[in-house]
Length: 344
Ligand code: DAH
Image (tube, rainbow, N blue to C red):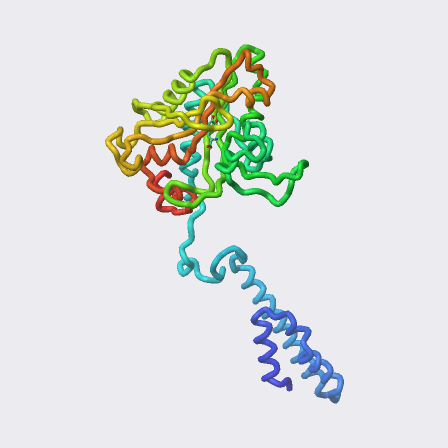
């Protein structure tokens, strides 16, 4: 007779799907035992060992079928896949994702500029010293470079200078001017807007993020002056906010524009009454702008005796904050779903 305890232990192992039950030394020892038995006992013992082996095989097959019925293991799931569906922790339904509000707004902003005859070129998220500073008339070692403190890579360019996470979209001016220069030869203006993500070494607060979006604009043609600059920006802003607005310019300094201005806008949220968004001032310092410096046009091979142009650059996050009364710029990148869902 087969030792019942041993047989039950082997069956238990097979029930759990343990394949080694069939190849176990215990089973082998039963077959070895068979050879030592007297002939009259051998047949009956042999039959029961065979039956045991068949039973183990069918238990293993049953265990395999059961495993196949289980849902496949999702190694990314933060719960055991064997947990019944109803008992699983509630997860975000990926089907409920939506376009980020900054991107929805950007599409509307670009649409306004398309209708004004501008084309759009996306900026880069890694750039070099020439595009960040050199082409924009920042001399080597000039203190104005300090206003654009940002992140740099360990890897160096051919001149042994680090690559830069751009602190503004103006990095694209030289490329865009060069690329669209043939427009001028055809008698058409260069008119481009350049949206992109920019980076700064900032002390973070409700108004400052280390990563945000800017929209740059360049316009070059014969006879372009400051009046065109102000008219173009005012037209865009009134279209975007859907109301009449007042604008003001204050003298400012940028190496890449001359003259340079800080562009002020009557607060579209409170209409100059004073509110949290405009810090009770009624006016908002919106962006930087000016007439493109002749050295910047030269760097792109544009003849400054014939052509002049204006440019501007400002934060997209800021525009959107003022449209909806968002009080903290950090909400945009905070992954706060209660915030984001308001726009969905
Ligand atoms: N790049 C400037 C900044 O981020 C903003 C700016 C000022 C852009 C004047 C321009 C410009 O194109 O002409 O502070």
